Length: 419
Image (cartoon, rainbow, N blue to C red; front, side):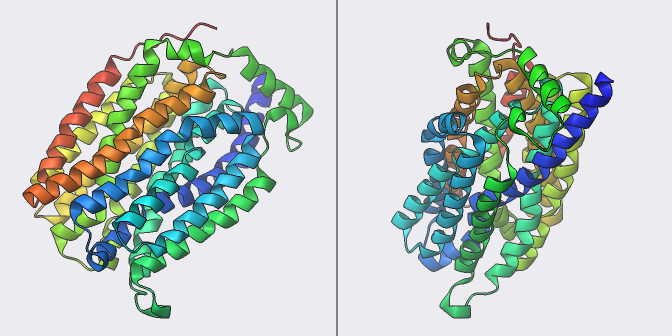
């Protein structure tokens, strides 16, 4: 009877939360990275150098880092429904306002502000999952949610490429249409958050009383940790370093991906958008399968390390095939598989190791400090591109850093913080 209740409860929770939050994350991620497609025209129209674009693309993460812990703590205090709804509407407004960029200063300011308002969403949802999914099921839940990242790229590439072709309509450039229209869904979804999300299992009227009681007891039995203990535990800082390197190489290539493909192929903007869907399409399947295997076996470290090594191989192969667009796209697919495949096991490891109450600050701290890599990665690519005229140097650097991340993941010590 207990097994049947468990399966039914987790099935209902999954179908209630994951599909909707999946859609919100698609909008979130698209508003964050659509600048990579807008740059195909914006850099030329506004006279941005590779360094200027790399700085603006990366400066998002400074706002994201500075406000992540405060935003996550506000969520823990006021509830996920109200806070996630508010910040979703806010980032939609800022994302659409990116159409008003007129030079480097406005570009930097709006990208920084977008990072500020997006800061609480991802760590907030990871924390929210600790309220709804037992540790044994969490990596798979996180992976299903994070499949939104490659799906956002699959959807965003063709849509952004098509919107770039609207240049001249209503007196707007194509890149302005990208920002204006892709920010609007977030505003609508933010309003729906207030209707669909429930803060805690105890308040979930869409679950039976027996299911509510079982889920609350199960999560309570796993025991909380404390942020103070988590900070004093080596695993937290090891997780931060690994996540920093993963984020650095991930965003370093992602925010330059259309320009890498454009430089290798010379294709039109729409064709670049279509070709850029190949890596995330394969990565979406790999992400879920790797996370499901991690949950079944209960093993986390190898499920983080092995995909990260695949990422390193992919970067090295990309650097060697930059003049062959199809081979370069295949190599970038390895990069995408490795990065996406490590996500679910990594956050399953982080949440189960840090404990539930420590997650409010601990997860945000891992993600906040780690996301400094999101600033460093795109900026480094821009600097190297301006200095050498090629992406090869930065890609080889990323290959080495991904290899280091894999080695560090193998050395993670899985001691829980004391209660």
